[in-house]
Image (cartoon, rainbow, N blue to C red; front, side):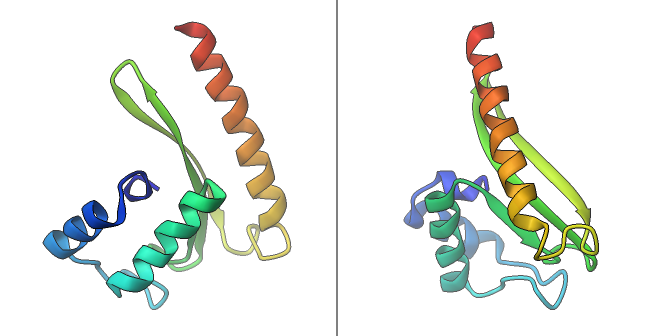
Length: 110
């Protein structure tokens, strides 16, 4: 989610510098595949962790922008059994709606 805020060249430079660790069998470790995922995140506005970091855990995350000098994110995480493919569209929709409310609230605070 954070790398999707960068252009491909900047993201690729970080990937080359730090590499892509394999945490699970689902981890994306190929640079080009990772860039394709970043393009999807930019297009759709949210990132999904489909058991890529921890087996049995899924998450949805999105960028809320910057507030008071901090980069903010919204992250919903749960067990894969409760965040199965059937429920993910609803979870994504709820996260996107909540993010819009949070962004509006943060904007009104300024």
